[in-house]
Image (cartoon, rainbow, N blue to C red; front, side):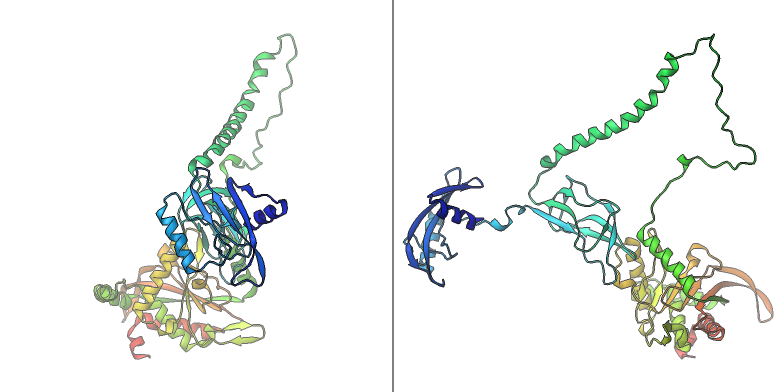
Length: 481
């Protein structure tokens, strides 16, 4: 902008001009050599006078070098003189301005953030802020639903929402602009746009009422004379006894599926279409694990700061089973079998927005306390909607605990691209034969669904048997037997 003004002054040969409400004056000096420049140029001075008369002096050369009023290069001494002059005269102020951002210096744009390596786009689920609302730095203004998680779009600056650039339901990619935020706007600047919208809503609301009342007029005005023949009655719409009576449409609601729900549906259907799934069952006596938990739960919380649950026991049992049957931890890739020398356990967590599966990485290296802490942290993030894509990526084996909802038995579906999934269920006291006597025992059914293309029944049954042995006698973990 400043360069444009200079060119305009030189071209038109004027000594002053006005730009953006400010007054520029220019005095041309003889051509003098400038320090740091490549050649010779015309040195000049520009004075910016504010409207109220306060003086603000900027000495600028056409090459961008600071020069003195005499036309020579400005040194440290000259700068000190200028500074001292301005400090002694309160009416003179140093002033800088970024002309390159003049058009939108007060406005910033909120864009969709990076959503993860495997996520290329998302659906704009909702706007948390509307035009005219005040936002702070990093405050969420919208939510993007992806195939795996919901991501917040944060405000880059504090200010007022000026305009929304996208609509709910739009497919957006990282870097997509969704809103304009004014850093210096006031509520009053946006308020005038609200009454027309309200008026419009009012008109829309009143219109159906008028239309609804219109049929009543002809009823009173055009009453048929008695001597005229009566019009034939309309055919009865009462359904015949054999015709099914459907509920009225007013009692139904149509809601679009979220991206997360669609992604889960597609993956589960792909799993059924790809894997030769087979499920084997067993039952586990929970007596010893429950006693272990009861005896040490207080000391466990006091030392580790987390409660001792059953999930850590089943994770350790699954690790032992996967180590004894490595094929269950493997996966088919084309015509090859990939054996994994690591054990990352995926834990299925049901959230209000759908099913997510965070991963406990390196479970074979973790103890009970570390597993419980990691599970609690991941479950909290999942329910709060703050879990990241990276925390759900990968996984070599899945555990799904339907028992927390009261499920007695089920056949879980494999989580691709894994080859097996363990299903836990509710604990129920049942009569069992122990030592020749019938006694009540807390029993749980466990299910293993596996890809029969890769895992034979022998390996699946031995894996589930190892789960049963470790849960029924946790001391096996200490002795590694």
